[in-house]
Length: 354
Ligand code: SAH
Image (cartoon, rainbow, N blue to C red):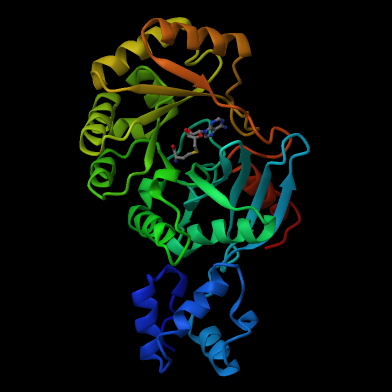
């Protein structure tokens, strides 16, 4: 049997070519994708001949995920989805309502191999990369389920987007395509732990996404302890890539910094962070996004107190760096990346199911 085609990862011209090669007229592509973008399956495509519905079912992989579990915050309406993929693997997406629009946080891999010590997503390592269609599919299905229009996307769910580079780039281009979602890359934030060569590559893609860089430390000594990627790409190299990205694209970069009690949250550390950022980035505008840790049961780190966070912000301000504390949405759902997935994996293990 020939290999199944991942039709939802194809650009319109490619999908048309596939249809023509399979004896169908080109115009069917528009019809098929108008249904797919609404989250419908091949056998729900009412204006297609039954024979074509059947042919698509036989020759194409259906990669739109299904909702395996859903939690809605009673506090702010944040929706946490656990999506089941075509092979049974699960990933998470979070739909957040902001004044400027509805934002979806999506996953880019099943699991993660970066090994950050405070993160739940990386507990079981990486299972596989997500296909472009599976990243697109999270947006499509969140919209179909909620009735919301997703105007912004953040790639801050499970996985390291720059460790799945080709698929992520194709996803961003597909999402931007007017015949798919028409989602401008300017409305997408991509978060990375700092894979330096891929930051240089991204700068050349002409995809004006907002880059967020997970720093979480002011020295290589501390960063080495909490983020294994730092052994390969230490802070100076990472900041060098950030500077080059800014010079090439003119896009501001935001730095994520998760406060870990007693590890990286002292005022001396804030001061050191300010100096390191200035030294590495020169006059480039700098914004630090502070995150208070979502405690993960399997990990030892503790959340810093609110006063500690405030003192950290004030110290950074004194050295001319603006920092804001990320608002915590969905505090009553399992909103930390990877927590819902790892909980579900565990409960199926406990029950001895597959
Ligand atoms: N792989 C990407 C996306 C990860 S999730 C990256 O490393 O940037 C987005 C952000 O949440 C990252 O800055 C990540 O370090 C941070 N994060 C992960 N686990 C966290 C936790 N338990 N509490 C707070 N922030 C966390």
